[in-house]
Image (cartoon, rainbow, N blue to C red; front, side, top):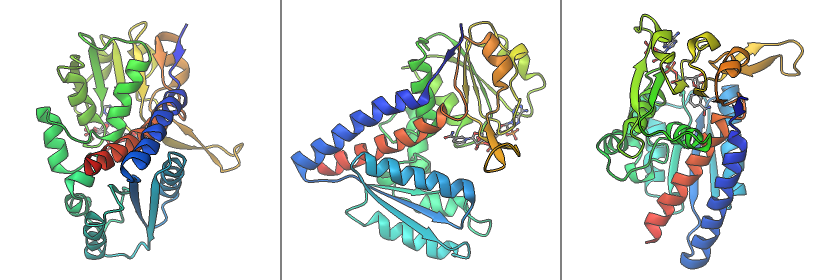
Length: 291
Ligand code: NAP
């Protein structure tokens, strides 16, 4: 029978551990971990992500500083704010919710974040450290994905993992993490230049799909018993829902769940883990300061 990998359950356990760590840090060192989340504009998906992050932060006992800026904010203004937060002793983690409006370059903003407060793990310094195996903040979604695979009971070592998608925030770092000595998977990275993705996925023990397109992965592309991590979050119009849409992943859940040994649902799989690993990194950042 196919196991539904419950990201909420795994996240709940880890968040309880994080909350205990926060309480201990406050009691022993008088330090409260603080996360600043900056949102530029009012993209509805971004608003809900930022709200969820603030709520999770508060529930873990952390200081949550949510900064909402108008869509017309300039790149210079945003960079100046990030630099101010870099020097703010109450703040241990800085996150700029992406995407930012088109007139602002992601790179300019990410580069402005001090690597020691880059709890998203997006700065070139943290990405480079991850690649060469130095201590760093691991990017939240990829780190959460590795935890979900482990939670499914799969021993990753020696397995063939196929990652569909090569973005800098999901596909590439997931592939890099799974190929590290600790996890020791053999990794294939597929993208739109891969002529036949199914040729690779049919041989995979683990498939991570992060394409941003519904139905990128279907049951006929899977080996019996494979573990499937569906990263995609896609809004599909659905007049029967109060909001007029529903969320689906990149995998066709119905056909994949007939073949997979374990699969994450959307929602309720990767999403809760992304926020959890953000809290994890923020606590770690505060611990480093308190040492
Ligand atoms: P992205 O930047 O759009 O990258 C998508 C990647 O998938 C690209 O590398 C693209 O290839 C590849 N791709 C697209 N269609 C494909 C196909 N049919 N076959 C093979 N490869 C294909 O997306 P992203 O930022 O990585 O995000 C991916 C999805 O994950 C989105 O739905 C996003 O909303 C979701 N997401 C969820 C979370 C979470 O916490 N739950 C976090 C981050 C992202 P090319 O490079 O060749 O174009």
